[in-house]
Length: 433
Figure 1 (cartoon, rainbow, N blue to C red):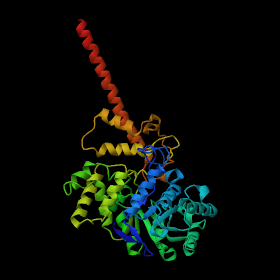
Figure 2 (figure 1 turned 120 degrees about the vertical axis):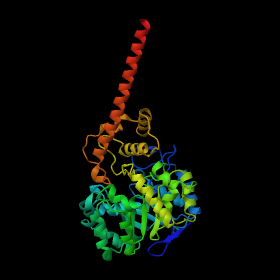
Figure 3 (figure 1 turned 90 degrees about the horizontal axis):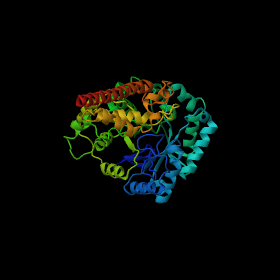
Figure 4 (figure 1 turned 45 degrees about the vertical axis):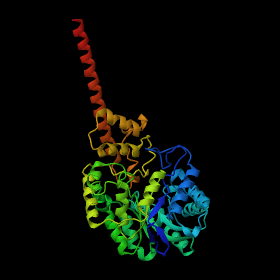
């Protein structure tokens, strides 16, 4: 296992476990609301225990969770799995977050209760890395209410002084003002790490996808200049850089026919020395095995390979994908839409090398969003989802576009069926004549 180091000198595995998609007893995962692979079934604690033990035995020691993950069960389930493994507390780096997203969680007393619950669920008396969760999400005003006006940030700094947390950081989504404020106040709060969305698409093209975004290259270099270690989230863009995509494969497969697309994404990230750890939300055991192998040890990319990854990113963006990472912050939709699955369906269609037929496209829609009441045509354009999207996607606009696209397909299919019916009727009349 390749290792890096925390700000206080603790050895940390370059591959980290993101406890967002824990396995369920029916073979799905427990992240968020309804989406492809999501399950309402119970988390499979025995399987989780087996996965955590496997990771620990192979050198993975960074575990990231949140009170908001896995329907609120992630911390407790991870705590049980780590307890069952028998690992010594000092041998792991445990990260969780102040996930005070709802207004009723803004008051400082509510934040304190959340932290104490985290300790209880994780079966520990301190947290190695404590994060202000998604500081730019929903704008700077919300960031201020969640962490500044209520005194929560100053309280977190006190927790660090008391050694109840060892390192203080934040995860960043969205509003550049929030990131800029944190950098301007680094001398005051001495950030020990920062968690950012980083991958070879967002490295130089996040701003291209949305003008409000900051490119990962800018974030990484700014943090590196200030001596702040980087924790990476969304290394695979919600799985899109791991699934087959002909735009990516056409550039990368000739370089190494045996390497998976996921391996390329992880090698890109490990090339940068200030990346402390890369979080992967692993559900299937096969993914865990592959990711461990990729990092044991990790082979950095050569300059030529980095150039190829940039070419792959350019080809990928020509497909005009919706930049959804299935983070679930837009859910639940008040009108019942399954927003992440609708976007996953659209991106799956454009990632295919060949042009799908109408029947194939509609069948794929049925597979991704089986319930008709959860599809794009149910969108009212209310916009409640938009303020919660870290990618700043214009969700109502995209839903209307997908609805028109699907509507044209359905109409064409109905016209074709009507033409066929007319031809059959004419054929029958000719037979009688």
